Every structure is written in structure tokens, then in C-alpha cells.
Length: 610
Image (cartoon, rainbow, N blue to C red; front, side, top):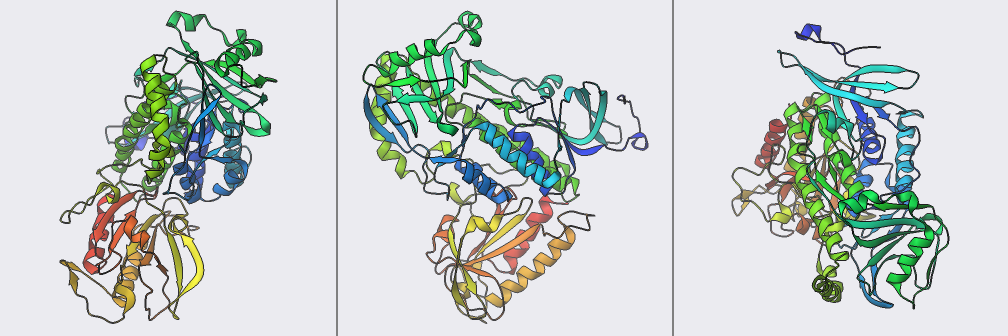
């Protein structure tokens, strides 16, 4: 057994056992491990439970998470093959279909739906991907986290010491540079660090049922049924023809909740409650039972997400809320995606540790919004009083006409999540701030492009989406929008509205010069001789068919929509450069694509990197 020790000088500091320790083998921990593996960061993943839970809480992977899976590489195809895409909710009042709501549909993503699959299947797919990268046994099961702390020396050096225990093995201490705590809503890490978890526990009495159901109305899509008894049920299709039922059984006092035991629930008792809601004109017979339990909603947000920039909470360890909207698992996956590339930059000595401050700045405000969204959905859907039920019915009459008008779709798709100006999201010091949809911190939008064949300068039949250019974690993608400046060659640089223009010869000279300098200064994996992927990729997007003198890769924005989505004029403009962070949010942007603009981009990288 190795015990924790007191250290006084940097020369006393022990060798680290592993750069990153991950506690928790659920979706958040697994995804963090996948990203670390792809970024060549050694890690250790420990999980207390010996087996994966057979119960599925989360059911949907939303559009934004699917985009991130695509950009990660190796994930999107298995998920699309396993899941069921759904975008509409059928809403009944009594036995009448009152509305069909496109609550998961959007116009701004290739994934214009929610992908439904059980959490057990999500865990299985993530595990398969991780094991394909690292080998079977990479998830170390049976390890219980007993304690953790950050050790700090007067010299400023610090690291994490985590005490683990396993039956028949005993206790040992793992020393790591960082700890990602993805150990769930009852997080031991959060508890040991005395991080408060304020919020509330709701009095709603919810029953969850999984099983086969014989119904006179279709249950192969998302369905909500509002009964005359002021109660409601929501149904969700599962694998193997099963159905998830979330039943609103009113409210109980804390004492009433404490008196309830899930083992006392019976299929016959739930059947009676279902009959009372759906009424005599709808048949909904519960045929068997895969899972039956009470569910009590907690809405809580950790007081802080990081501890001394060494230990980070992610997923349910940082935030919990109701299942309404299906946001929880997606939030955890996006926590991991936001955090891991920053840790990798620091460990590869390409960025200062202060870049990790942005995790605390960015993710808690998003969780706060999601908790409020989920609470509002739950409150409206399970309203007991007459007034709010009337409001709900009126809203359902108009929402089918309003939701299709929202470009990014309803907020459940998570495409509207954005960050704000901070130490990695930098606005240009002298140029005007653009509208919110184009500002730093917003999600990189997709668009249709065509690859230009050079030197014949014709549009090929090779068409692709802008997001397909962004594959590969840990990469800064630099989008160069050239408006119609590349339609002639050899023109002298002028200016448009005070912003210098460029031509194809000068542009590609500047690009090659910058890429050479950046790659030399910031290699993807410093010290790793096997590293063969650059940390920077530049993509030139022209609104008109360019004339090129040499073999250069250019993408033709045939309709000009990609320019429009990034706030750049497609005709008569000076173009613009948009820097996308490795998690595909805008980190920086500058008007123009001249040498001066590239100097500004270079200055941005020098400011946020080492």
C-alpha cells in the first residue's frame, strides 16, 4: 500500500502515476477517455461498479451532441445505426390528438432530430470505441474512490492524490496531474472536496415503467397524453418493441415520498393509474415489466466545477435536473468535450494552465440555463391547477406554427448553447462587435460546399458539409471566407470600407507562412515522435468560383449561405477569418483576409497559447 506523503520542495515531489485519472465509467467518463486517447494523453479510468447498469435513464442524444460525435471521429456511424431518429411529439387530450409538436426538429443542423437509444446502448457504443482505441480492460472496475486532494508545494508545483480501494487488492494512492470526476449525482469527489450542491428536490411523484405495451394508439413515436384527472403520461419508444412510460402521479409531501418504496410498486397498480389518465376510449395494456420505479426530481448545480484547476466535476457530479427535455446525459458529454482538449493543450505544453479557467467560466452558466429549461418543461407538462392547464392547451394550439420558424429549433436540440468573451474567446480590439449569431463563443454552423478542382478551376462533383471539415479532436480550424476576391488573379490589394482585400497568390502565401510558423511553435503532441497531425487546419471558402494559379484546396460556397451564416458578405466584401476552437465554437474572428488580418490571428494564438 502506498500512502499520501507531505512534500516541501519540488525535488521531493514524486513521479506522477498518470497524467489524468477519470472517476466514473458512465457516458461522461467514457467520452472523456475517448477524447484523451485520441489526443495521445495517457489516462486511467476507474469505476466502482463491477457491471454496467442494465437500467436506462437517458434516452436521447440531441443534435448538438451528434455534431460533436461526428467531429470526434469513429462515433457517429455506430450511433446512427443503433438509434431511432424522432423529432415530433404527439399530444393527446383525452382520446383526441390535439397537436403534433416538432420539438426536436431544427433547420440548422444536419441532424435535424433527436436520436433515441437507451443509455445502456450509449454506454455500450462508447465502450466499444474506447476499447478499440485502448484495448479490452481499459475500464478498471471495482475501484472505489475513498478520498482525493490537491497537493501544493511552496514552489507552486501541484498535483492530485486520490486514494482508491478495491476488494482483494487493498488501498493505494494514485498521483495524477488532473482528476476528472464523472462519478454521478452522489459524487464522492464533490463530497470529499466539500463542494456545495445547492438546489431543490421537487414534490412531484413520478413513476417510470419500461416494458411491452399493447396500445390502440401508435407508440412508435414520442407521445404525451393528458387525462381528465389532471394527470399525464409521456411515452418513448425503446429497443425490442418496449416502451418507456413516465407517469405523473401528482405531488407528495416529503414524508409521503419517504414512505414510498419502489419494491411496493406493481404492474397492476400502475395499470390502474394509466387507465385513469388515458380514459375508456384508449387501450393501453402493460404486458410485462423490465423496470418499474419511483423517480423524484432533484435540481442542483455544484457551487463550483473545478478545485484548484486540478480536479474537475463533469456530468451529474456537477449538475442534476429533471428528465424533461432529455438534457442530462448530453450535458455531461458536452462537459467532457469542453474540458478535455484544454487539458491536452496544457499537458502537451502548448497552453498555460490558466486556459482551464474557461471550463469554470463556460459550463456552469450553460447548466444553469438547462436546469431552468428542464424545470419549466416539467412544470408546464405536469401542471395540476386549472389555470396553467388552460395555458398549456392554448400554447399547444400555437406551438406547431411557431416552432418551425425557429432556425436552430427548440432549445432541446442544444444548438443555441453559446459561451461569452473570456480568456479564450477574444473579440477584435478595434473592429466592431458583430451580432450575437456571429460573435465569439457561438457554435460553428454547418453549410454545403463543393470542392474546387485545380488547376482547371472547376467545381467538382465532390460536395460536402462544412462540419465534415472539422473532424478530429484538438484541432483549431481556421475558416477563411474570401467573398468573391479570388475570381481574378494577380490583382493589387485594395480595401473595402477600410478593410484590406487580398488575391489568391497573396492569400495562400500568407496561409503557408502562418501554418509553417504555428506548426513549428505548437506541435500537436510535443515530444511525441509519432505525432503526425497538425494542430491547425485552414479551410478557404470562396463565394464564387475562384481562379487559381496553383494546386490549392478551395471550397466553393455555391449559394453563399456559408458566408451568410458566419456574417461575411458573399459579394463585394473583403472576406473574413474565423478561428474555431477545437470544440467547434468561435474563438476569434477578424474582418478581411489580408496579411494584416493574419497578423491578428497570429496574435490571438500567441495570446492564448504558450
